[in-house]
Image (cartoon, rainbow, N blue to C red):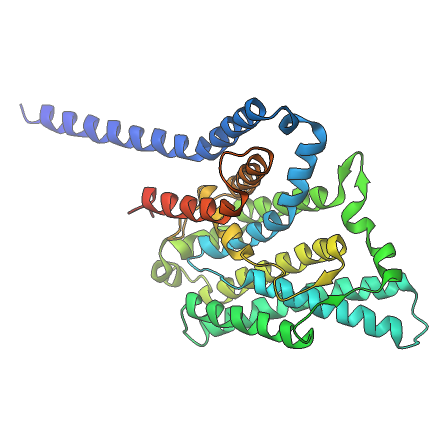
Amino acid sequence: MQPAPTDAASEGRGARAAAARLVHRLAGVGPLVGLIALCVLGTLLNRDFATAGNLLNVLTRTSFIGIISVGMTFVIISGGIDLSVGSMAALIAGVMIWTMNTLAASGHALAPLAIVAIGMAVALVLGAVFGLAHGLLITRGRIEPFIVTLGTLGIFRSVLTWLADGGALTLQNSLVDLYGPVYYASLFGIPVPVWVFAFTAAGGALILDRTAFGRHVQAIGSNEQVARYAAIRVDRVKCATYVLLGVCVGVATVLYVPRLGSATPTTGLLWELEAIAAVVVGGTALKGGEGRVAGTVVGAVLLSVIANILNLTSIISVYLNAAVQGVAIIAVAFLQRGRR
């Protein structure tokens, strides 16, 4: 008569496990369902929302934060955080513009196209260097990511303010005309930034889901101590996630600079909030260990759609967009209580 309770208990555990898997799957498609619902709502509220021009505009404006969010996904999954990406982008933009203007005015026999290429390379190198500095301070210095990136947030923006003498660094007109297509040009009717965002997201998803590095990132976020026991080079992997994020910030800045042609102390303001919001709204666990790049992409587009709907309608003021993102972060964090 003893096997019956054991079988019943086993069936109960199996049912609970199946229910947990179902809830997990529903949570994975939740952001996509929310995005579809928002698109339907936006169309009902304003017919201009569903036009091809408006949708391409939404995707183009999403590209900058979306690219940064791809890198932020790796950092958050590994159990880290970076509060400095907006300030980092501002400083990179300022140094880019200063470098290109200096080369153009120095009288060197460099072609304008070569000067622009050098500026782009400077942006990517600076992003990687800043990311490496974060990684080393966190892993070798044993300082919490929150403290490190909170400190560099102020450092980056104050250095840009000093470099611009409190004003703006503006790209020379001759270089603006040459550099402009990086943001304004289209390929097969789709703006260049959207293509770069798509390739970055596809590459990030491939790395996270199909490589040993991606599995190591998730293992570290799930349980760092166990990852060390499994002979994973935790410090090296963590450094790599911050370098990857820094490069993503560099790529986003390369695309952003020709949009305005200048860098000011307010450039990139609150980008860190938008990037973190996109990641967590997309389903990545704030405690680390779980997340998908596809969800981050949906989260980034979803937040841009909210901003676009606010611009096209008068439901609430557009000045409350950051408040909406803040509420989204808090709400998702509340729903993720105890999740690992």
